[in-house]
Image (cartoon, rainbow, N blue to C red; front, top):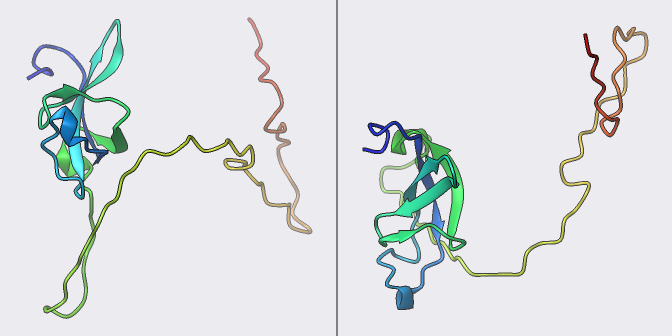
Length: 134
């Protein structure tokens, strides 16, 4: 509906840290989904129709897509005996924010191989960007 109004919208798949005292209808041990709309003055705002609320820090985003088909909670092929069963459990609880680790996303470039000539010299990752004006 909101796309028909000309607003950008997306489907969000993830989990919800449920709180029955807030009237949550969702099961605490299941995946959850909601939608987000881009409002020009506010940015992306999440709306949770299952629990009739605005998405907040209890909504844990795992994937974003156009609709459910873009971001199902599980995808793949099962190969095994037809009598097999799959059991899944989810536990969501609030914790302290993790400390930032500067090495977490560090890119390690491989060393050049012996006898291979490098054709271009790259700037270090922490070098400032240089722009030229014309």
